[in-house]
Picture 1 (tube, helix red, strand yellow):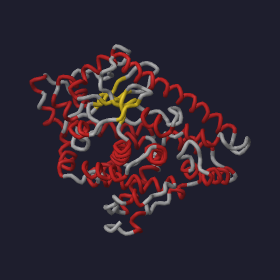
Picture 2 (cartoon, helix red, strand yellow):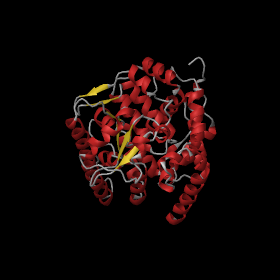
Picture 3 (cartoon, helix red, strand yellow):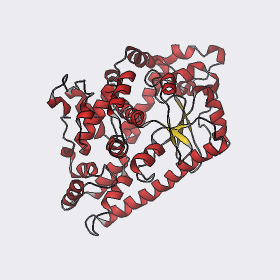
Picture 4 (cartoon, helix red, strand yellow):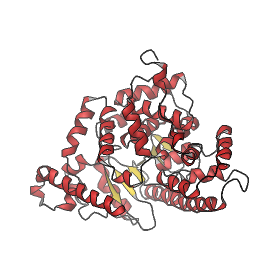
Length: 405
């Protein structure tokens, strides 16, 4: 704490000011509410909660199941029966998705037990931090495999019914340009959640490189037979992910108190790893937000690694992003798109990380390959065409935003 003032430990935001429905969500960060959260939920229930607004917020922030697990603990009549019925439906749907996610991992492991597949977030966090897969809203299934084994992993998944919706998906296996400028490929399967097959854990290969993962063994998840990050690396990864996406969903933020309170974290090791990776800013940002939004108690061990000053503009942008519509998660307005990009740069304390983010704007993506199909010999032209393909996609984003309104 010698390098930063006590006041700088506190996040200056007041999320409860966004209305009683938003405040109610904040009291539901944990599957089992604390006494103060339970009492506040009851007090808010007596204040005419707008059920439709609450349901919309829960869907927007992907925490419907957490909300249901909290509200159903109150006496009958405390909350609107319509609200509870709708949340129960969502919870049942989420339970089915959780089982499908678990089935996917188990099918993969059983098909080839020796294959080094790692779970990113999702099932890993659900099992270790929430102790119940159905409590944490299921999004994508994120699986990480070594870069040289992407094709083999795809073949295993394809044998179980997974397929790529991209017509040029073969480029992922044969194009060094596309593999280096991307970090995942999306796969579909009927009646299953979307699956992202990763060959590196983050978009930026400089943030969490394979060389680092090889030096830091992954922990075994016996319940699935696959792997997950060590306790400290899991916390760091969640902070990196939330920060890189501008903390736009409460779901990502709620993961932090559950991980910290349910999993033993060696904070000296956590800060050492965060500093080695150059992501201590993202970890500090996540902890400060978790304290502000979720009532996480920051111990001296947690704040020992605080070394950064976060500007008011960054805090305001996070707050604005969280209060925006679902459409912003895919198509943010320009000023918030710039915020997300700048937040990635500010939280990247290593020159190589910063340089890659700046140069990544010139990297082609599979979407460019979808727009224009070039012969393999002309593939380098995608770099030249990047401004055109980027502008064309921005026009489509603007049209999608217009159609949504």
